[in-house]
Length: 320
Image (cartoon, rainbow, N blue to C red):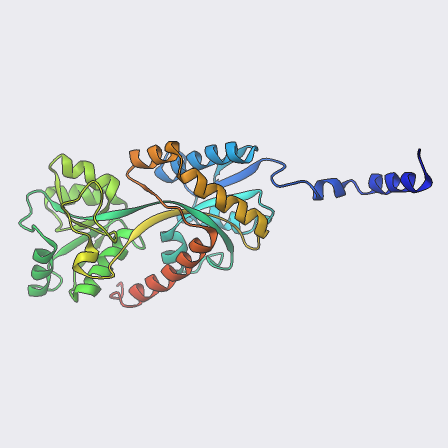
């Protein structure tokens, strides 16, 4: 039986069309996934794999959008300025979140401007020398640098890259000075290393392994906390200099102040995704390691590494 009260309630609902939407469970529409680098690269490939599996888990399309420019800053600026409703997320890396802030002014705050959502994948670097190099161990390398400061040349993939930071950290821990040469990318570094034009570099493990197997370089150590599963004969730098560790990593972030329930849902889904055979096969094929970190763990990692690299950069020789 229809009463005046029920008619009044129906009329009120008709006047508030947004009320039903406000009560809908997240996600109720497609999610945008910002990738601040070009399509086809390793970051883009990882993002698309995660987007594919998130789409299945969440039951809504997860659409990758490549927003390029300024070494990732334009895409991340767009992410930081997006509504914090869970419908825009993005991939970033530790070099962007924890190293770049020390090298110049950014259009966003890498801590306050984002909500950490969870880890995606990580990888160490390999300390590499040319195959014909007379240097056969990290101890050899350090001994040469102590005898002749600035004579041992180190090639980095560019200012602010993981290779430059890892070389700087080694110099500081071993109390030596290298002749740092910054290139534009790792490909020319490896070309000069193989040709014997520079003495050493730290190279992304997925690039270092095939070059080592082809007999073009020697990997003397790896930068993770423990020995790499593929290069078990190469010591971890942590064995030689306790506490020495550098793992590059990719992670998922959203705009600041995202709702706690959505953050937890995404964090939980990422942990589950990384346990799947599909994701494990994907990272294994690319030389990555799964990096199951919760939103809270990622937040702590970001803050800790921001401080760590600030200290390393402060003690680096001033650039001319």
